[in-house]
Image (cartoon, rainbow, N blue to C red; front, side, top):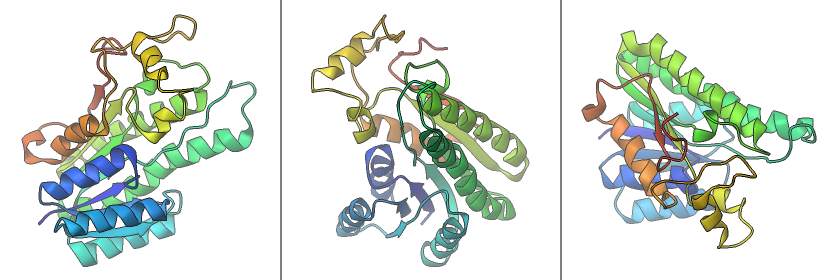
Length: 254
């Protein structure tokens, strides 16, 4: 049984990935700082017969992440997959955004990506096998009003993954990013005023320089999880250093 570490597993895309991997026979190490959400996920997965362990951890904490990787290897076996979905969003105009908010977004989104990927990749390199998938965002490709810190962090994440993939290709370790557009998660809903806000996302907004979604629907977490799980499999064995944009055409293929 293959083992995979999933960060941001307590909710949203990370939770969907953990559920899908468990259904497909993977052993899952679920990581998040939300201990309540982790607990309910762990109960659900174990109730369905999956091998799983949950780990409360902040992805910025290198020492704690090293402990998680070590414990996963001992309890679930060699880690052959990583799906890093942990991230935060702090909105606001760049000129008004506090240093604390800016730093938090960059430290969690970019710093956390580096910390987690490096900790997992070292063992993969030693074994000369493994696959890493990082959840980025289509916000890495186009500017967004009031989302400067998030856009900058996700653009950095994409380039980090590509550089890591280039460096690790010779060790048979594949590294790819998936870049969702608007997806029905708690992070997305925090941006909405009410349930009608979804219509505005689909239609787009000239005032906010945002295109709509040509496929005329918001993604579900499972839509993103399907691609992330595919990238871990042997079927994707010749795919690395890629950034797959899953946004219903919102960024027009840019």
